[in-house]
Image (tube, rainbow, N blue to C red):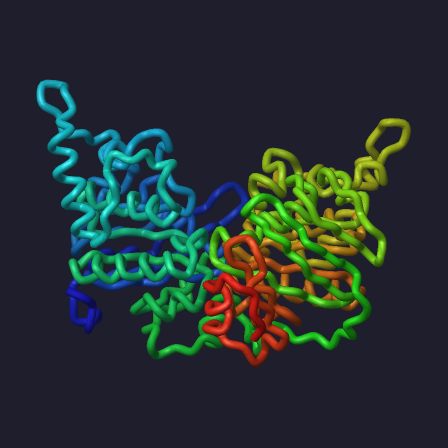
Length: 507
């Protein structure tokens, strides 16, 4: 029963006056949220707005200091994760909670296996699992190990797990972050099927295009406070951004007036097996070249070859007319090429170390005297970038893991700015980052182009690629299938046509 007139129905979920404080931080300041049967409620806000804290309270991971939680107008017990599940709440986090070497069936029923005299009833599990996938509308081999599944199918397994727990409320946290456009369409189809069954879905995403496609209403949080809840069809994109960040952003992709100069980076016939096949391109001084394509097209692999994180089979890399020998990341760094990795948490930062320590890792020689590290000089150098790129931190000694996604990205960027790299590769620079932090990253990219840097930006977000690039290269099956010379006049459909072609073409 899809939601057609939410106001006339009994709420499936109501959270009222939710407050939560941590030492020195008021995370939630009286937040309200209402979800109805058969609707998708988008929950939007910048990093640090309180979304994660609110969801952890709903999932039983945190206890509120104040507030009321009701399900179907009755007080709900969500004091523990187990109590939350028993109340019909399922949380699907961005990082899946699947055991890779267990089968689909075993993951679905882990901890709640149907038993008879202490023996697991495998046949009964198989019957229930098949019914769950029939309900979702997607067939997945139930005895396949989860590590053999695509990311999209792993997500469907997570949904099946919540349904197996008889969930009536499902929270999806950045569910499309690692999905291709085609897989995202499949996810939306599943969501619509769940809506038709009366399940309420709280959908968290920084991708505004998705919000307008899938949600019925939007609840906005800012700085731990409830701002408003509005019907999606009655609000503009600009208004959504304004309610999230608290200010008007007239141009989501800030324009720049940069004089594009001579060729700086030249890549010729770069190859590695079938993953990267004879890739050639150039980037000029002050130019942003976008690189896109479907997941698995070879984008990240190309970036890792340029950075020396993987070994090329053949091909040449030149910077300012000089042929480079890059065998490892140290070679790339010494020759002024840097990479902001796709996964900043596992590849770009050491999360258990301080911001200062992460900042200085590729720059240690600048801060060493007789094998001693000058920590004061490190902190002073970092403080310059804290102000310049608007990094929100409590101190330079703050642990990297405690930062929001946007500020973690700025820490990674600051260490390369200190290195004064000439070629900067951004691999998914705004993944999991709110719209306000995205705008700041875009402004930083523009500042780098004014200094004559050569920028390669890899992104799955087509509006971002078209809005920020001077030229766009499209990859498929390991090679470049086309180039868009004037992105401002191109459409997402133009990109997708090139992303699904095997032979190089132009647009």
